[in-house]
Amino acid sequence: MAISITPSIDYVRREAEAPAPIRRRLEALRTQAKAEGWTFDVAYTFAMDEPLSRITGMVPPGDLLNQAKRQNARTAAERFRALAEPAGDPTSPAFNWADLGCVTPVRDQGACGSCWAFGTNGAFEGAYAAANHTLIDTSEQQILDCSGGGDCDGGWWAFNYLVSTGTATEADYPYTAAKETCKTDINSQYKAATWGYVSSEDMVPSVDAIKQALCEYGPLAVAVNATSAFQAYSSGVFNENAPGAAINHAVVLIGWDDSRGAWRIKNSWGAGWGDAGFMWIVYNSNAIGFAAAWVQAIVSLPPDVQDGPSLLATSTFNWSDKRQISTNDNIGVLTFSLPREMFVRIEAECSLTLISGAAPVDVTTGLYTNDTSNVMYTVTYRKATFTAANQSLPILTSTVMKLSAGAQTIYWKLWPCGATIGMNSGTFSAVAVPGPWADRYRGGIPPCVAARRPRLPFGRRAA
Image (cartoon, rainbow, N blue to C red):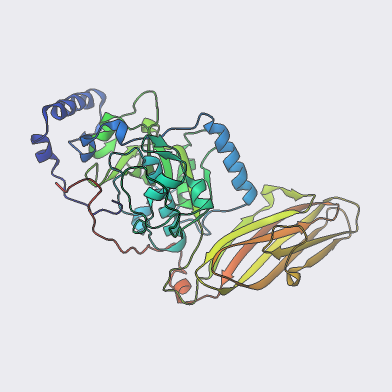
């Protein structure tokens, strides 16, 4: 399973040798295509070898909208932000993460309704590539066995497991297309920092909202209504617009093309479906984009990097956020991962305004690795005094910490000392010693580098 080569599919020969029921299905679909003006072709894809119910499996929670609101509220409280520099312009007529080399090869879920796991990991792999400039091949089997997100009869996004536990590589925990006992002795080295829904108000976000999220976060996990026509798609721009919009399948949305009026998606039915496993699908067709979700990978360093990257993590806010704190609380939280013990510079800067409280008022900030109130690195202890109402003061606190290998969390806390303090703007960042790896990519989001291994899709053979 996992990464597969792209076989040259002879759909015509397959159909000529297909059983009579398959040929009749295709004839009926082509009749429907003429009647409804479809702009795509259908053929005997490898996906048609299985019942549609066995290769789909997205099952939305009953209280999905409430769950989306709660998840996005948690993400907002964590104050994580998107990529430091968006990879694309959401107003551009076209954009595709694959053009930057940040999309992993097509996989095949086999006769198991685990699309939810492939959608989860597919988006995470894209986010990791955007953040770390390298492709990783992660384990859908671990998500299937261990996350609690579902089984071969269906499930839902498993991003919380990537945050709490992480994922192993495909090589360490290979896919079998069947739910098995969770292996707990596996190195789950790749973790997510946080995740969220593109919209918690509308489960099918607007085209503009999806474009914005794609540029800011990376490939997105989305749901779609996969029909018989979807199953038989071989090329063109899919525009079925099936009524009802009952979603049942997870895919990864990687780009768009306004000239086609369509999204580019990566499926998990192997390279013997569609355009070598990919599809163009018209905006809003078959509820594409339902429950669109982004994920942020923890920045880590490649094992061959000796000097480390420049930027490990960053978080910002501005005056329009209207942030206020009246009790001891975190201004920000940074999470990142180190491959070895190293020195990291932590810097926090913002502008504070006295909202309420009798002047003079002293406020204190500090940086520390413990979330307990009043526990911090003494060297970062900073005080400021407001001498009048509505006064603004700049705050800058920084330190260099010697941190061990693995996941790290740094807290930036404000003690308002009985007043209510507003924050006009601020930046919180963790920076390692710059080296050749950082210099190589200083121009922006680079093409990602992958060591692709030529493996056939699980349970399939090349035509």
